[in-house]
Every structure is written in structure tokens, then in C-alpha cells.
Image 1 (tube, rainbow, N blue to C red):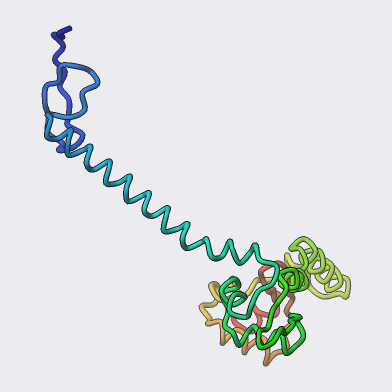
Image 2: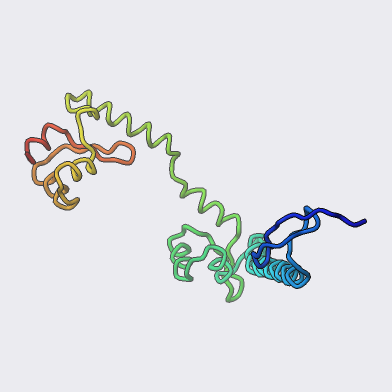
Length: 195
């Protein structure tokens, strides 16, 4: 079935304008269509190769995670740390290990237990403790957060370096409170010293 449609299109491969006989034509000619096809095939091969490389990279780690007992070398690979770090952990009795002949083996569950011990308290607990500290500080007759600058505000306001500000706080025994990510100092004291 022939078509009398003539549509102006732009070739998706070379970018030249051409007259198409259908509304779905994407390329100006056979050579552009073949080159675009080769390009798509090449891209698919590169993506497939990258996926295979990624699988090869992660396969040893997955195998190590599946093992119940690990050697020192395998533990180093799994944790991405040096042998000395593992040996220090064993020496400090942070990481239990057993010897079979000349080989030192570490139980995988002991590694998991080691990291569960080192988990820090939740951020909410830390923030609650800090709010309690601020409340105690305010109850003691000292300053409230609303009456304080954080250290960055002082640096911007008075064009003072961080080390000079820390030195000023230390020399004058200025009370400093840490709340959230910031440390605060009383506005009235800072204004007196720096104005």
C-alpha cells in the first residue's frame, strides 16, 4: 500500500532534515538506519559487559558474606581494612578468633556482633540529651538559646577566624553550649568583647 504523505522530519542519527513518507520514519536513509542500529547494538554490548564486570567484582564479597568462618585475608577483603587492624582487634579482644594449625579463623557472627556493639545511640536520644543540657543551663540562671549566637554567626558578624574565636572564648572563659550541630555563646558577652 503506497502513501501520499510527505512529512518533514529530522534524522535521529545524522540530524539532517528530510521528507518522510510515513509518520514513524526516524532516519533519512538506509545508511543512517544501519549506523544507528550498530550504535544501539554496541551500547547494549557495553552495558552487558559493564554488568558482567560488576557481577565479577561483587561475587567474591557475596561468597565471603556467605561463609561462616573467615581467614584474616578474607576478613580484610570483606571489611576493606588492613591486616594490622584485624590483628589489633584480635589482640585487644574486641574480635574473638580461633586457631587451627597456622590458620587464624574468625566467625562471621562475631564480626556482626562487633559492629552491633559499636552502634551509637539514635540521633533522637542525642538531641534529647542536648535539649536537657540546654534546659539545665537555662535553669541555672544562665542564657537561653534565643540570647546566644552560634559560632558561625559570630564569625560572619564580626569577620573573625574560627581559631581566633576559639582563642577568645578560651581566654575569657565564655560559657559555651553544644546544641544539635552548633555550639552557642551568649550574645551579650560576645558583643561586649568584639564591639
